[in-house]
Length: 422
Image (cartoon, rainbow, N blue to C red; front, side):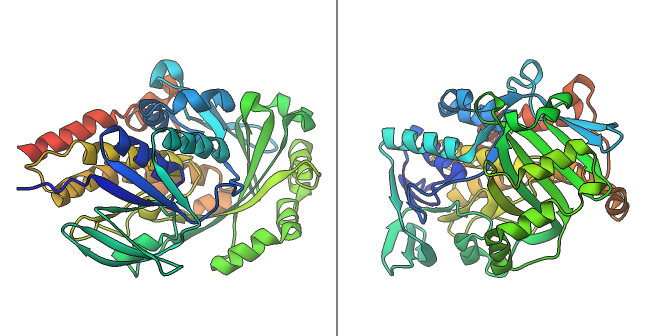
């Protein structure tokens, strides 16, 4: 049996997941090339709290040492009520002596810039300004695909790393769409020095009041700026509606500041910061999930595959959306790079998907738990019992989170391949 392992791969989307996959493939002798719709100077906003499971992947491809000094390291997120400041839980995002790494809060711009530099150094081409539209045809030897400018390309394999509204996914599953959870995050950042009251809190922190939650965490080098996110219930919008809200800065500020009397002066001071000239990264983040809609992530011939948010989007509550994307990308790169001739591509992808989907079910459980901890008592009472629970902070929550943070993806992929090689 011939494995038909590709010697070259086209990747749609040069963001964190796609770039991690490309660098992993290159290190195993497979040549990737990227097609990215946005230009190289596009202003990438937002940040990520990278946890040990993804940091181990980044370390393996040589990226962790390049980004570590540009972020803010921390161990745990504390959950408090406002105004009582009662601790309701503690979620460890990292702890070096338990998981091998502290968590790293770093901007998306820094991560992508470093990964793209690494791609350039490795001789990987990134073609900008190319908007993928559709797969034209696929057979056992490769796939042909088309862009909005009507040009076509062909490669041995096509990977969709093109986000939650993936065009590549629509080729595999035209009727599958992300599910809106009913909750929205509004976010912004401002300089840490502007909020003296923050020194009295165990940052990062999630403050829950009767009308929702405010999430506050330091980020960037030395924690010199603060990220703030507000989680609240919000009526579903279509993509145009979310885009309209994003453009209406006054409306977003009004929502963020709509109920100052419901919060203590400490939180009111945070609310006030969004109106200052130094506030930035004002953003809209609707909470969608896409974890149980598909039984596979590859096409019949195995020549088209989706990864990251295109395959398994989860709400950002536990910070595992991006972290899971690193896992999926790195593991797929290892799988393709180590296939033997007696294993079919389709069988390998099926086994890999079963492994990744099982982990994503666990990620969704943790995500739902954290999301409910940030809900009001009234909202929490409406949720199913299996979404409620407590955070075990004993031994840094190792019994509860060790399965997530201590994963050995290299070992797991070797095990998958060994079982297939028989």
